[in-house]
Structure formats: C-alpha cells, structure tokens
Length: 583
Image (tube, rainbow, N blue to C red; front, top):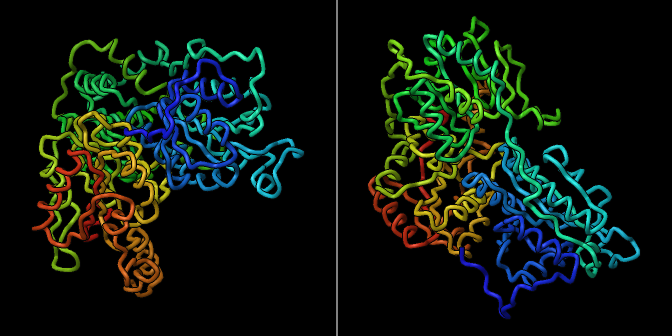
C-alpha cells in the first residue's frame, strides 16, 4: 500500500514523551500493520503520535470516509489473513456510525481491536459544548452485546494493559472484535516516569481447545462404522495447511463434504469428495440429496445445523449427528445466533481444525466405501426467457472466469443470486465468504480490506456485489483508489432491492393479493442510479452499464488488465434476476 507522505519527514523517536506516544509504541510492538480510521478530536493525541512519533510506519493510517467502512476494511483484512487490524472510532458519534459494521464483524467472528475515545472524563477539563456532547458515561454500552470484550481504562498503565488484553482476546478462538475506549487526557498528558511498555511475547494467544482422546476414539469408530458419512464444513482455519488437512481427512475416511457460501472457502468444491453444490443458508438440491442419503452427519462449526437438518429431513427420522463447535463463549442471548437447539448423538466443544488434526493423527490408511460419495448431474443452466435484461448471473460468472484467465482471483463476496455451480474454489483464498450479519452496505468496505491484505500477492480481489450493497457503501472505495490498491468491483445490478421483491411476492400470494405490486417501494429506477459515475467520483476507473452479453467479455477483459496494472476498477453490469435465490 502506498502510504500518505509526510510533508515534514520525522525519525521515529527512541523515547516516548506523551501518554499517546507510549500507546503508539505498544501498538507497534504488537505488530498491528494498519489502523483504519476517520479522524476525530477525541483521539487527536494518538493520531499525532502515530504520525509524528512513529512516522506513520506501523501501524500505518488508512483514512476512510465513514466509520462503517473502517470496520468493514478491518473485517476484509481479517478474512484474508486471519489477523486483526486496528480501527479508530471517534467518541460516541463515530461508534454509532460504526455499529452495524461491528455487528457484521461480530457475526463473522472477525478479529480486530477497535480504539475509541471519550472525554475528557474530568468535566473540569472539557471544552465548551463539543466535549460535553461527545462524552458518554459508558460508551461501550452502545455495542457491548456484539463485541467479545470492552474496557475504558482510567490511567495510562491500565490503558496499556487493556490494549494487550484486547490483542490477545480478539486473536483467541472464537475471534470477535474488542473495544478499548481511551480518555483524551490519558493520551494528551505528559508521560509519567516509570511507565514500562508490556512485552507482547509474555502474553501468548491461547490455543484453541482440542478434543480429548476418548472423544476422538468415539468419533473415529462412528466414521468407520458408517457407510455414508457426510462432513458439514463451516468456519475453519484459513491457512493452506489446514485446507490440506481437511482434504487429507476426507480422502482417508471416505467422507462426503458439503460447504456453504455464507462461509469462506474451506474445501475444494470440485474435489470428488465434494459432490454436491454449496448452498447459501439453505441447501442446494444436490446438497439435500446428499444429506438425505447420509447415515452419519458430522458438523464442524456449521452455521445453523438445526435449519440444515430440517431442510433435509423435516420432522422425520434423522441419521446419527455429531456436532462440533467452538462458539459457545460468544453466545449472550442478545442476538439469537445460537439458533435452534439440535438433538445430537455426540457434542464436541473444540476447534474444528483441532478435531481434524486429532482424527488425522489416528487415521490408518484410506477407507474405501462402495458408491460413496455419490455423483450428481450438473444442474440445468437457466436461459434467458426474452424478458428483462439478457445477462443472467451464470453469464456473468462465466465471463469473469474467462477474463481472469490464469490469474488467481479472490472473490471477496458473492451476491445472493450466485449459483452454486459457479462456486469453483480450489484454494482457501478463492472465496472469503459473506458479511456474517446480513448488514447491507458492507461489501465495498470488506473488498477494500481484502485488497489491502492481498496487495502484492499476485492475487486479484474481485467483489461481485449487488447494486443495493454498492449504493449504501460505495464511498468505501475511495480508500482503495487513494492508496492505489488493485481491486475489481463488479456490480450485479438488477436495479431493485430484489430480495425483498421475493418477500412481497410471498406475502401477496399468501393473502390472495396482486403479486404484480411487489415492485412498489423496491425498484431503484427513474432515475436509475449510475454506479460507474459514482465510482469515477471516488477516483476509480469505471465501465458500464454493460447491457448485452456480447460486450461483457470485452469490458471485463479490459477491467482485468487495468487491475493487473495496479488499478482500482468498477464494472456495472445490468443483470436479470431470473433464477435469483436458486442454489
């Protein structure tokens, strides 16, 4: 990433002189590479220290146009690296701006350390008006239900301890954002004598729990005795070693694997052990057939096991079920992400990769199974019926694949209309999953964070996002253009809040009312928003709207060439929502 130049270069100082200098020095020791932020007076002291004490060298400032974007950028960065970024959130107002993005990151189990600020807590030191309206008695209460941990330390020593604690907690599985709120006075007071910086090496991140030997033996026995075992792979480790371990276990144990597009890629989707198309919250037709044939289902951090099993079996008999998850520490009752209670035959509290490693360590040779996994015919591809825009989502998917050629692509997200047959992933970075909490507007910011993490790797980040997602979060892309981050954004533009058109149609049908009225209050037309013009206003190269299949290949080829040359590029494609929601 191209850093913002300093008009007056500074040499990083050896000794901190102010409270915020010590905080900045600790953040550097903790190896946070970036802090995504919208500047604000509540942490002006820290801002000065990052620039004029550390020289904007690490953590490096990443300037954003909205606090939601700052958090989404950190989420996108974590999706690639598995590591936390810093986020700067100004006072109570910046925190309120960021709230939805924080919820998305929490639901996505994304690590990040958010540094907020308030005060001065000492009322006698507040400036007239502005410091009063930007000071809150318990600022973290705004987000406490959807962060892993928060603190508002009362001294510099306590602040240094809180930052170390937050760094450890956010990295420990299950990950989630943490929030530390700094009093402005702690930052701006001269440094007291005797304040020592903590040594990060003395505060290791605890390992994810592994299953006990008896549980591993029990699970191995169930796998060996099963004839048609299925492994439901949810959220798991993002590294290549963990990926290869999952493949090795599936091959050795003869497991059929099923994945879900809500989660990042965890298994090669065209591997023989992955015979069914991934769904996206609901089972694909072949995924349903696969589960209905199973006599053993093993769920590893699967998002909603109850809904998946009900989708396959309804209220009828079910196979043996083993449920492994490590998310219990984050369940608090505020949001119902515990989902339904599921009767299972074996419950395991452990990290999914630790379970895989334990099973692999005791696996002995490959276990052959007759006619398992099964094979399925390819789904019938939808064809344009002559109504509406002629470009269908599978047309867009095919054109992107051709334009990418041999260049590795990381899809930072995919829209709801993406077909499971077009989910072709062979590497953990091929697909980064969805936003976690379903908060619309996150796609552009997550894409920028992923582009930041992938810069210099040779991979091209590609965000295929809906027009509603783009229009809510488009200004996040200014950050990518400003820092010269290679990124391709493809807007799958149906000029509607089309997901809700479907809801209106269902309600109208149930009530015997005109389904033709489903578009009222849904269409984004007259005038049509112009994503390409918006993108150019933020400094991107932009193309479109692309209306015809014949021009799609040419435009995408040009866009990929621009990104390969270091550009931040947007392509607006008018897509027909025909087949929307099919897996």
